[in-house]
Image (cartoon, rainbow, N blue to C red; front, top):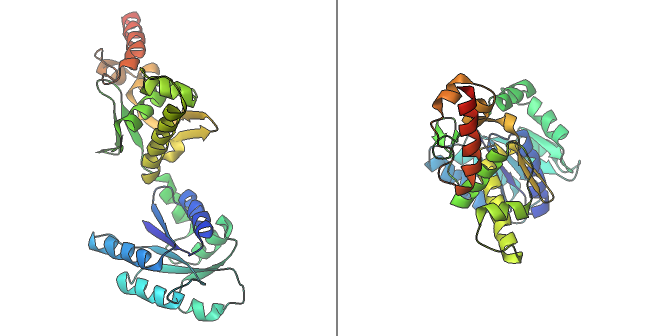
Length: 278
């Protein structure tokens, strides 16, 4: 499902986006401060076979009137559900209701959005919660080369270091690591300084954005100078091996994350565990 937020006040747009991203973690939420860019995005979705399901539009914006903007969204995607966002409870609401499925009064909260969505046919709170329960699952393969799948599709990381970072967090099994530890693994031959710290933080952001794009960022715990994986949120052959799963034990043939040299310590541990089981 595709949702869009259009508000020429950037902070207000970002605030509403954050709420929607938490409410719809498996869906695509886009935000725009420019009306023409928002319309171009809707057209691009249509050309690529997609559609815009929800549009949250600020009532007071520079440029074309919000009524005209709503009309153009309707021309592109007739089924789009438009909700107006306003900072004024007396701002011609009756007129706007004729063009929208609802309106939300600023400051926007999750509860206000829930209230409006309850009134939209076919999109009750119960149905939204069911959609959240059907979230995609991350499948992690560590035996042999390291690979990550969302369902049956491989997860594409923008850089190999972002994928390696995720592999390192899998290997740590939920133990938290800091930026210096991550740097020492990703760049074994480099001294830790300000530039390397910046590089590492960029890789962390890339990894999280990749997961977020699939609605899977909740498998990562991120705090100040702290990063960890929640093992219960992924399906992993290594974790199954540790739990005594016979199928996982039989699938291990002496190779673990073969593409990463730092994984040799865990390989030795797995070899010893397998030997002791015989």
